[in-house]
Image (tube, rainbow, N blue to C red):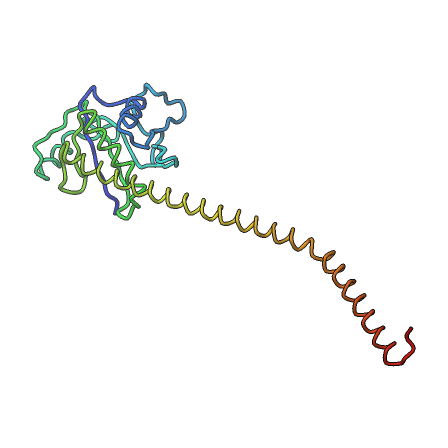
Length: 230
């Protein structure tokens, strides 16, 4: 079973791609909505062509998202049906009501979605509420609201961003430590090889000297024993 969240934005306040990216950048979020096909920055933010055709870059990584953007109106599939939405809002206890012409963002994901992939959804929904006058509500549950609702999502995303940055920093530090250790090991190996390279000549000369001394010693002792020496 998938989960569904929606944000209703008043008519005339729905952002373009450029406006959303500017708002995300202003907030310091590492998220950027990507253009596809012939889409332009001044175009209203929307999916490109159906399922998983809404693309973003989050923390430097590409991500496909199940996001649909359309106005509220009298018929489906061209619109989110206004009457059905308002019936749902009444059922969950919200006093807010949408109007024909207001814009909707509908997002869906699996219940076990990793936090890293859930965070971009939270950032988009929270920014639509906080910066573009949106109202958020859960499509299959009782949660709804404005700033408090949005802030909970933003806090969750910010915690994920902080965690991922710490993980990346830790991995980078570990990689640097391993690289430093590898350089030290390489330097030690080169020094050992250089030292080893000088041993054969030293050993050869030492062996020659020892053999000469031994030969002289033996020779003298033989001469002394046989009495044939000078």
